Length: 205
Image 1 (cartoon, rainbow, N blue to C red):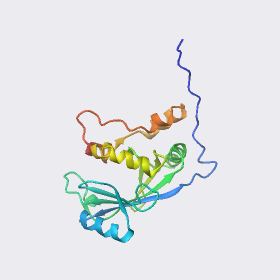
Image 2: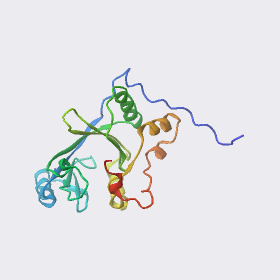
Image 3: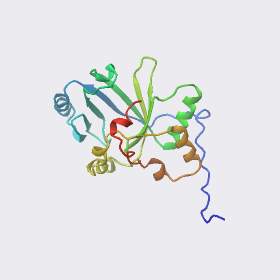
Image 4: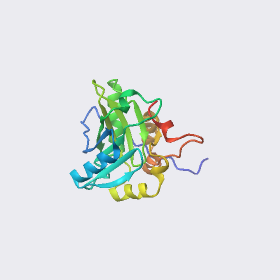
């Protein structure tokens, strides 16, 4: 007989019985033609500070959120769709108060045949990406860390620089683990990149 105690079940909220709404509008991400120029312009405009940046992206914050504005430099990478290489809106993100509410929303939308095109654990967030009827991108996310200071510590640790994209996941499998009662930190902890993989291997299929 196993000495390990069974975890108590933890059902997802019923998103069809009571409306589950985002807790906040989290951030806007733009594709820009000149990252350095846009970085300087938005820093000046918003009196913003840089939370994280590399040669491709820059995250800016001016309040308690870990980033309110994301800038993505126009990528010159083979294999990306042409619309990914044009300046404009990349996506708008909405945050849910709990992981259970995010997964319950995924389940409700799935039943309506509204499915995410990209599911990824970025590290700071568990994120589901959708496209509206016109192709505009919307991110529904759960904040893994409790504060912007904890996110900044994650950035400063080098973990995000090592893998700025994240790790893809199956929301059905994550929902099953959630309902089985698995600990929240285990559910949200970002796994390492598979051997031989790069962050771009975690990008859109």
